[in-house]
Each structure stands twice: as C-alpha cells, then as structure tokens.
Amino acid sequence: MTHSNELSATDFLPIHQETEPELIPRPSLSYWQDAWRRLKKNVRAIISLYLIAALAFFTLAGPIIWNVDPTLQDLNQISQAPSLPKKATLVANYSPWSAPVDPGFPAEPDEIVDEIDPVVAFRLAEVASTQAVRLLWEPLTDASGYNIYRNESKPEGFNDLGLPLASINAGNQIGYEDRLNLKAITYYYSIVPTDGFDEYNQYTSLKVEPMLTITVREALERNILETSQDAVTGSVITLEFHPFGTDYLGRDMLARLMQGARVSLFIGIVAPLLYVSIGIIYGGFAGYFGDRIDQFLMRFADFVVALPFLLFMILFKISFGIGPGESGILPMLLALVLLLWPATARLVRGQVLQIREQGYIEAARILGGKPGYLILRHIIPNTMGVILVTLTFAVPSAIFTEAFLSFIGMGVAPPTPSWGSMCNEGVKTMLSHPHELFFPALFISITVLAFNLLGDGLTEALDARMRSRE
Image 1: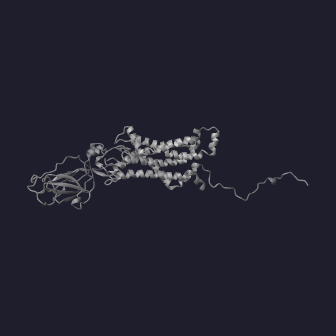
Image 2: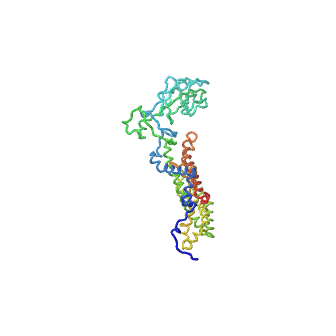
Image 3: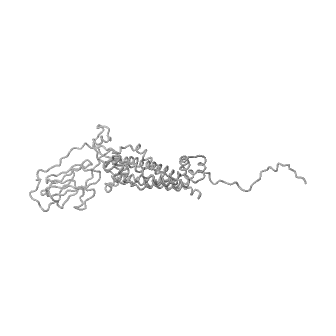
C-alpha cells in the first residue's frame, strides 16, 4: 500500500472555529491611571479636590480680583456685618456743636427732693445721621443733672436702658450730641434726671433712626470722590462694598482672609513638604540598611518624637530674637520641620522593609546598583502612594497647628493676618460681631476637612489590593 505525500489546495483552507475570540474586558491601565480611575468614583474625594482648587484660586488670584488693601482702616465702618453695597447721603463736613443751656433755670436746685417728674419734650434738634445725633429736652426745676443712655432695642424697664453715654452735671443744660460709632440702625435714647449723686426712678425714651451719611472730606479721603468740585451736598453715593464685613478696625474681612490664606497655606504646605521629604529619605535609608544602622536611626527618631513641640517653639522664638506681639513664622516653620518628620520616617521604613526583599531590587543590586541609587530610583518611587496619603494628612495638621499657635499668640501676630490670628481677634467680639470669628474659623474647617477627605480617597485609590478585588 502506497501513501501519497502530495498536498492539495484543500489542505490549506482555514479551519472555522465555532467559539468567539476572547475579549479584553477593559484596556490595560498603569498603576497611576487605575488609581485615578478609582479616585474619580469617590464623590467626597473629588468634591474635596475641587474645594482645594478653589482655595488655591482664592489665595493666588483672589487679591488680584478683589483689589482692596487688607491693612486699610476705616474707622467709620468698624465691625460692619456682611452686607450688600450701601447708599449714603453726602453731607457737609462736621462742625462742632455746643450743647445749649437755658439761662432761666439754675444749674443746681435750691434743695434735693425725693421725687421728680420725668423729662418732657425729649426730641431731636435736627435730622439724625451717622455723623451725629443731637438731642434736646425741657429742663426740670428740681434736677441737678441728667444721664443719657442708648440702646439698640426698646427698653423694657429702668434696668434695661443700655449703654451709658454721658452724665451731665448741670440742671439747665438742655442738649446733648452723640457721635459714638453711629450706624444706620434703630436706637432708643433714654434720659434720666439726677440729683447730682443718685438717679431718680424716672426715664423718657426716644426712638431714633440715623440716616447713613458721609462727609465731603471722608469721601475724598476714601477716593469715592475725585475732587471737591464733584461734591454736591444731598446727593446719594455708593459706599465701598464689604461682602464679608469689616473687623474691629474697619479693615475689609475678605481682603484679610485672602492675605491670611497665603500665610496659613504657606505654612500648611511648605512645612509638610519639607518634613515629609526628610522623613522619606531618613526612613528609606534606615529600612534599606537595617540591622544596627536601622536601630540607631530609629532610636534617634524616637528621641525626636519625645521632644516637646511648644517648648522648642518658645526656644526658637527666643533664639531668633522675636519678642511678644511679633510674628514667629520662621520659628514655627523651623519647629514643624525639625520635630514632625519621625512619623513619616517610620511609615516609609516599614514600606522599605517589605520592598527591599523583592526580586527586582535583588536583580538591580546584582547588576551593580549602589544603595543610594536603589533607594532613590527603585524603592522610594514604589512608596509614593503611601507618601502622597501621608502628605495629604500632614497638610491639615500643619494648618491646624499654625491656627492654634496663632490663636494663643505664639504664631502669626497682628497686623500680619492669618486665619488663626484672625480667630484670636474675633473671639473678643464674637458675641456682638460673630462674623469676625465665623469666617476665618469656617475657612480653617473647610481646608482641614477637604484635605482629610482627599487623604481618605487617596488611601483607597492607591491601595493595590483593591485593584485585584474589582
């Protein structure tokens, strides 16, 4: 039986497969691409990332858009609450006013009586304005003087008359001028007759609503009017806009928050970058060499952890010659950098102890790689996920530390603004003017919360174990 070795054309026809080719479920992604994909699924982390971007824009571009001098004081707008642009009436420059005296009445009565009638005809001498409120009344025969009070709510009794403005020791004086930090709100003025020593249990109240005004001189000084020829008494002009209000010296709160953000975020970002970098290098070498070198380096790190931060902060301020009431930005930055790196060093050391046993590290060592090259080129880049997470948690910690030190007077001191020092100033007036404390505290809270939530999101996104679960 013979077998033919000749091949025909049918032997080269393709074989038809019934099964479909294998499909790749998703394109191949690098470690960082996959981490970014998972981070975008974390809504809280993405919102926090947008908040951080908005804070960066607020800090860098804000002063360019809102071109207001944060140190400019306007004593006519002290502790103004946030408001929309205001309209004011232009009036003539202030001229002194002498309180009138009725010569038909004695300055002192002939005798002190037990009872006296309340003051009558308590009225305004002219239209009340934020420049001055001038009051008139009819004299009382048996009065040796009068006490003037002012309240922002209607008095409900003799013990609820409000702020004492003046004590007039003349029974024949029938007028008084109030110029104490007047605002365009409703006031209740009360007058109480006295015998020169004690008050009588009688008072008369007057409701007054001062008109918001500005003098020609003030308008020129604040560049609202260009020249005095533009001044038309009685005309309505627009005052400066303070969307976040003003502080206790009349400085714009929004401009100070922008300026304070530069100080707070500078310390909160630069300090963590420096001490995290020190901790990366220190922990990387300690973990790579191990044995006695590792023991020596980590015992020194334990010693640094035991050093009291506040004590060294005080010592650095003394060393730099910074006295009470002066800003200690440089000592604060130095204390943060020199004392807070051990936590990062411990974390990086633990990662390096695992990575140094990997096969690619041994291969690079066999090929002649030096320890410094292996640490900086192969080991530390593979710990970047942990380092980024550490950095995002270190930034809010540094911001909070700066705020705390400035709040207790050991950090940034006035007039240099920072969120912490602004909180320190706002605490003094938080009951009467809460916006001076609310806004800097709000910015600190938002910044710390945003970085913490971003750190949580990076922890999940950079965890390589989660990639295998998806």
